Length: 101
Image 1 (tube, rainbow, N blue to C red):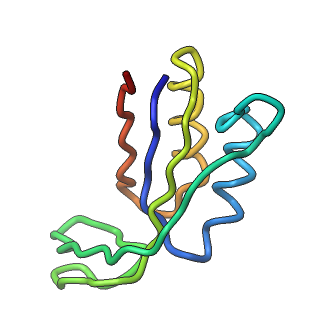
Image 2 (image 1 turned 180 degrees about the horizontal axis):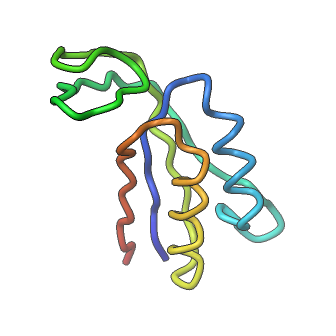
Image 3 (image 1 turned 120 degrees about the vertical axis):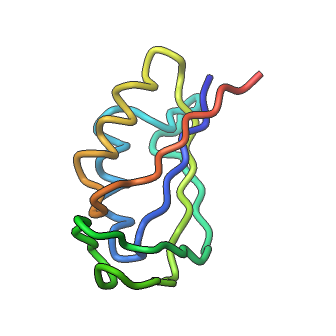
């Protein structure tokens, strides 16, 4: 099993939830779409050549975000990561796939 986590702007939560449900991420027993999210603050510097969704090229940005976590079976990891990439609004999304014991 893997825990997949990503960081999104608040307004993207419903898009991520829908994408995860479509690939059956967060399926636990008789429950579907199980995930957790909580507020964090994202900080980044947009380098030359970037196309930031939030902020300006050549500047630091600091924005409220949500950290979204969902557990998936091993065979569903790649499909889940791809589903997040398709709807994630950031040019370079952070998506962590952490193997659980």
